[in-house]
Image (tube, rainbow, N blue to C red; front, side, top):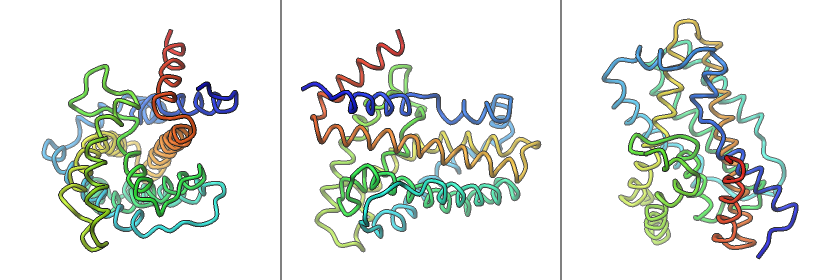
Length: 265
């Protein structure tokens, strides 16, 4: 089945968003120097600590921003309000430095997840649908590479395929449990997989905020770039899902990959 001209344009828009440079490149463009300098300044023990904090942030955000969300009339997503909230929390994190990450990251992650859910609704998804809730979580795994990736494993559909089994298992478990039992081993497994990718981007954000010249104002701007990145990932992700519902997953994937091939040729 061939996509209509409008749907083809929408898919190309999604492809451009999803395959654009990661958060490190975007932050580097802002600060004017590679963030590797900031990564070198981070204490060695902070690598594992950021991973733990990231998992905790995703768990808290899931409880607050996903399982408590309800459907409402569809309209444009409130991206600016969410961006302002994340920017303010980033300013606080930039002012107080690394120790503030434990408090700041769960707050900014929850705000971002709310924004992602808002974008999902704007693209026609029902937030009361468990599949949509888990698709919102998937967004945090997009647009960045895992430590275990090779050069061929950073594409959008490859990431989705890597998460597919964990998403299915989490959905099957959650569907049979009460809200109080949602923090299951299956959900934890999914969050660990997502956190593995999300923590790389968190590390890059924290590294940029750790550069002495950045400070509170810079921390706020870095967080604005950070949430904008995930808003872009969400927009692309839910456009693809909308088209998959219309044409089928295989048709959309083939069209997407053909567009990407032409873009890179």
